[in-house]
Image (tube, rainbow, N blue to C red; front, top):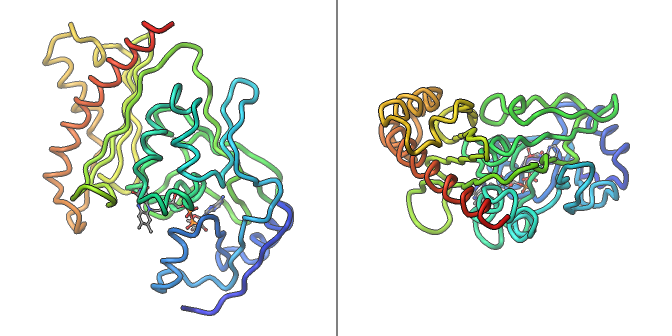
Length: 290
Ligand SMILES: Cc1cc2nc3c(=O)[nH]c(=O)nc-3n(C[C@H](O)[C@H](O)[C@H](O)COP(=O)(O)OP(=O)(O)OC[C@H]3O[C@@H](n4cnc5c(N)ncnc54)[C@H](O)[C@@H]3O)c2cc1C
């Protein structure tokens, strides 16, 4: 492993100062489930590693504030999957968190790390896109918020700037129920990175949000505001054509060892249809409970 210095700041301001001073030579350490592997295999060789775990402002936790659910960036997958508010109102995110790696990985892997790593296969990304998440960032100029749809650039690259780190991910609490689901294809049962991920959300006005990953350099969000996709009485050709257009941004790489482009595209269509059906049924069940 390449030699690096290890910093464990006690305040957010100090962490930002370190990241600003060292720029691309510095790397944040959260759960370490991605970073440590990359330090070991030499694909990352920072000169400084900045550990977030002793920063009081970055204590893990999930709270409600001003119509939003605020998930601290250092909150681990186990806690997200178990949170009653997330399971009830953001079901797809709870399901996504519950399939990341193994029990041991989920006990360490943070939500902030999952989106900052920016793998196209990141399981929580489609759910965050469907639920309209906002990324909260601290940096040298203070705090800023950006919609998750403007976050992912390509594999390993986000719109995070020099000296910045993620402090929280916010989810707007929906006024009316939404049915949502997270689905994925892996090469085998048990823990594996996804060959295709898909999340679907349908709200009471019939708007369908589909987000998919592992089929291109970044996860994609497509929205049907016409209500046709979620309408079981709509003409099948209209629904199929619409679905094809919503999936058109999938561009799987032929170089991936996980699955061929043809397989990924075929499975994406299957998961999308299944996702719309499950999300619609969950919406009906949620409306029935009101
Ligand atoms: C065996 C195994 C199985 C896995 N399976 C899955 C899976 O099924 N699905 C899946 O999505 N992922 C999987 N992963 C990947 C990994 O566990 C997740 O991406 C995890 O959420 C990363 O979080 P972390 O806290 O460990 O991040 P770290 O490893 O600490 O950091 C990851 C990257 O994000 C940066 N970073 C972390 N936090 C912040 C922050 N707050 N602000 C700015 N930058 C930050 C780090 O500098 C680093 O570049 C797996 C990993 C392993 C080792």
